[in-house]
Length: 113
Image (tube, rainbow, N blue to C red; front, side, top):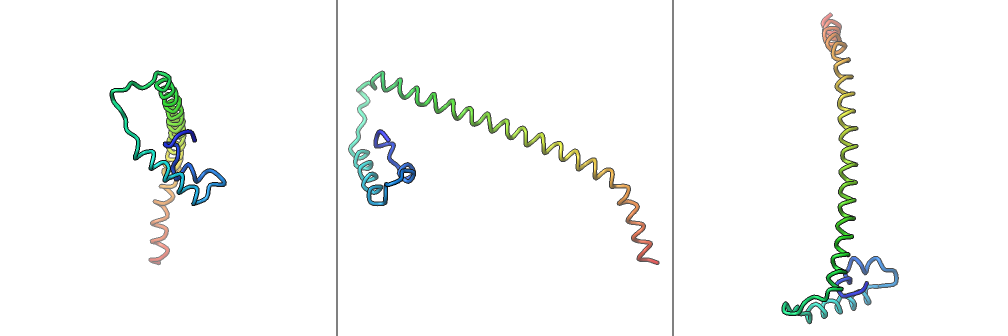
């Protein structure tokens, strides 16, 4: 964690050794920083900070894009497998239909007689 924005209940929960008292103190500190923060729209954001933000979000964007593409590939494989299984089941059902058609009269004769 580098700044107050990095402090969250979720991020603190992942760090061993931070108990409820320290967690509450850090959250209180973050909230005090947030309350005292004021953004001056007249001041320019330093170029090095802009570059850092662009790099951070570009890296994150690429990671999300890779993850989404991976999900698309996984879903495509699942869909292909599902289509194949449906075709197999349809073939099996078509093959069994004559047997079922004959079984109905056979059962009717057995219970009538």
